[in-house]
Image (tube, rainbow, N blue to C red; front, side, top):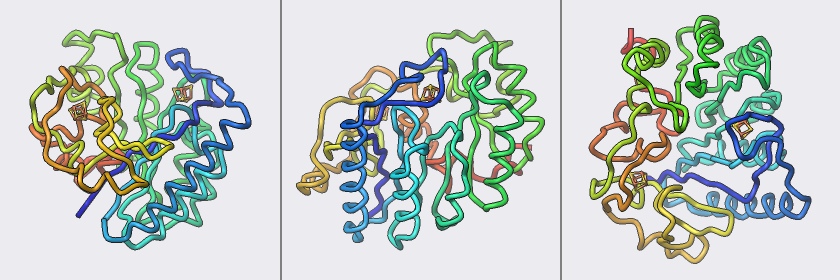
Length: 286
Ligand code: SF4
Ligand code: SF4
């Protein structure tokens, strides 16, 4: 049995100040940080104890996790477990990546996002160089806002071909054919992001081989369907995993629609599903 888990604890603070983000420069009070740390410790213990399932974990904090020691420690610990195939996190890469030297590079991976205006391109690229030195798998992404285009082009030009750069369509932004072509020149898979996917009634792996888990262990199919299907810590999640169709009209976020069966994206991202690296990158896309 294989299960991908998207974990999101209470943490909702970030060191960056992106104008398009509700968590920009938000501070969590000490009691919330303690609760986040405790919840992550409980989750990590659960992963360690659940050795009869092949697990892949993507941490998707509301804010930034890697500036907190407990996310770094959890990733190192999980990366060394024999039944964990992958442990990845979405990060702005502000924290120095040297801690990854302790992790198993065959299992650990990063989904990084470059936020122009919050960090210089040079500094971000230096972090990427360090990840390559450490042999850590990572993708790099940008939000496809018009004001990011020049930086995104410069970043793509500066990154080695082996590093995949993804572009997320900006929320609420419409792209005409010309704009879509401009961003597709940077990310050949931009087409999946630019239009929401009609998902109502369509089969989706979410709730069958992928789930979303929050700090108290509540299990939902994905981050976008609110109804719980069980809890991690009372064992009810096991019976809940079954083939299902999507109850929502559309699915417009990569971490969701990558599981929508008719899209076949598990094949497109085989081997790099959680950290968003396409199979055969870059050879298959030349
Ligand atoms: S780095 Fe991410 S979480 Fe932090 S403010 Fe920017 S978009 Fe929000
Ligand atoms: S299609 Fe998207 S919203 Fe629907 S169940 Fe799958 S991941 Fe969730």
